[in-house]
Length: 208
Image: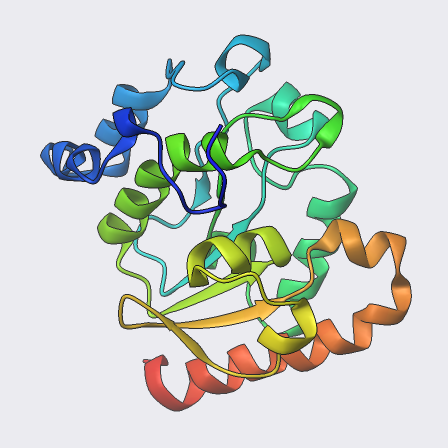
């Protein structure tokens, strides 16, 4: 295991992202990676949870990792967190079919623990290629792990939310993970502010 969140083991150097350029669609990328065993989670998962939604979405939501329900069904955000996420999207007049939803890693960590740095490093090139293929206008990072990983920092949520960041030139907004909102309902008002910010950016810059 590497010492820092963004240290990559030698077998996962940037050349892997270059290798992934051969896959020109999400379907091709999924087929090429669905049996991945590059980290220990490949041995314990039930299903590889690649992503779900509109392959040409202007908005992509990135969470942390699949949970138990997602591992069973092979789809992201299908449990209680998923129901809440659907409600959050509806509140800003998006339907799930309008967006694309995925996670930093594609396999469930045991007991829903946080992903380890080497697990993130193994899976991150797949997420990067997904985002390159979708070419969204806005990314919504759901939770601290997703935000820290994409923004390559270790800041607290309070320091990241409420503003517009950039990921490779793409607008990025940070808010709380729906699972955190279920544990801490008082944070829902902050999430509401964040997704209103996302909607405002979308309407001002990217709406048809």
